Image 1: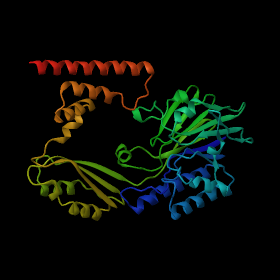
Image 2: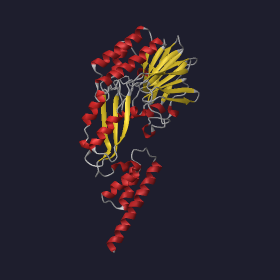
Image 3: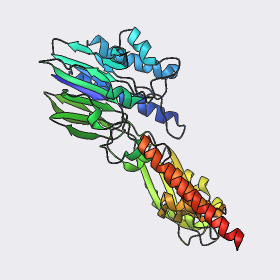
Length: 396
């Protein structure tokens, strides 16, 4: 048994408002589909965000339909769980693809009954495979997972698809949707989506894979410079398939003690020939004289395009003018230090700052009744301390 697992294709997405970048996302999807067909996979699983928005352009939708028609004609089931970008107020293009028979939408098998969320799925009897999943909805998602009822099939290879980030991914931090312990038990393969980098985890004796996005969706992904691709799983063994992507060059430029004219020359010397790449220059440091707005960015861009680059983006946010306040120092401070500095600039006294910091530290948290009582006690104590200080000052 062999299947392809891809995710986060974001058809219709672009970078820097370039039409060529929109075509890059389509080309990546085309390559993934063609490889899957050549590999003679039994089925394809997509873990969400097929499209970049729920109302794709005619061009994007038509392209997607043509590729999925190729898959359909070869009798390869294309099984998808909608991602957060696929879901809109007025519906999803996934519904249209489902109506014409090009995809199997796993969202249809999730039903709420009496506070419980009953999850069914599809069976591929000839391959003894059962597939189900949870769409990329954000609202009350923990409630759904905590009250989920799903039964893996005995004697089948069971696959659970989902479009959420796990707390076990180190880089996610506070932006995690759920913890791995909330995932339903008893599945052989967890087909994950939503996180844009390749991640492979072990859940008990089972495999959990995030293929990541098939193209670079934003600057942070471009800077990380991680491979883009998807997985082919054959006999429960994953194989990574790298996709070809447009070349990006991210170049930091030290402009310390340079004037605007010298910055242009330094940038020109750094630019190497390219064949349709995208160049990102991040200017850093402090100018010796002049103003960063005097840098002839057009001259840099023209020189880069003469050397074969499709597009050039020049960032000045980390470049200081000679008399600028060193705002970059703020990056070295903790959030608590920044908050306290702000409150002191607003002329709040120590008691008010202490009160504000206590309240800020609990914003957005779900608190138990005992924790609420404890916070109220602390607030009361701080207020009483402030009243005592005022009484002493008035009697002095």
